[in-house]
Length: 172
Length: 165
Image (cartoon, rainbow over all chains, first blue to last red; front, side, top):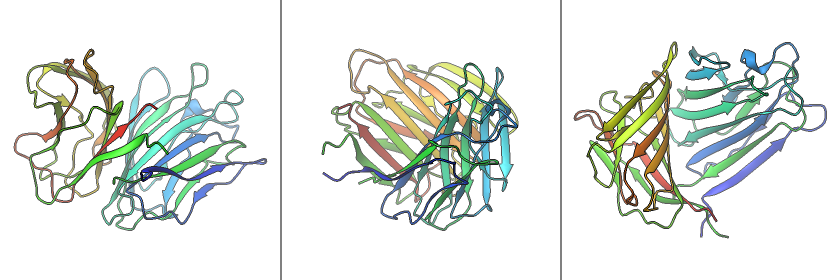
């Protein structure tokens, strides 16, 4: 039986941290991509409850991006929108409790097609009653196939043990 | 290798249609997932119902954000489950994606719960918990747009089955 949900690659950040996480040469043989993340940044000037967000890019590009998100970092949720400002996810930081990482997932259908690329994402952090998260609708208005994915911290580095796994999903 | 996440059916629309139905769904999985990457003749909310039941047996709670405001809403004794509010189906190809999880769909003792994520970067995001008050196993799922609006050619709908083994 064909495997329809397959791990393409996992990247785990090593000692000293990493300036970015990147998946390159993504095979074009799947229907959808599923990115699963566990992220913490090194910065110590802001806690995750301030909305610290790592940045997602496709094919190393920062143009033609639009997004809307439902954002919660306290008792009252709020909503945000943005255009060409980056796809913002959720990070914990050096000001959060040690060993607390933000969890997230990004689902990208039809990533290899010639239509614009939209994605669905959920990102959360929990730090003993603080931190928060986002529900995220993103659109990369490009007809190019997604061949690489980049993840950048808001500032500083991703700390050791941050990780990201990219899965490919086939619909047949 | 035992496959625990299997594609059951994919529909890539060759013509515009008002509804999309997955029928004769086998009861051999534990949960279902539907991935929808669709666009419409006119921007529209999307609803779903099961087993062709359009009686007043559905309810939902939705958390939404439209880019500037966040809120929530509920509906009860409805004839279907709206899975969008601001994360509606848009008119540009590729511009909206909807992910629908249907838990324990084949059991015949409990009502059926749906968790849906709706995403349209031009209008907003939604998270919906839906309920079908029926103990019947789900054997068909229908997605519908408002009024006579149509899903456009090239829209894709894929149904996956997940086995808890």
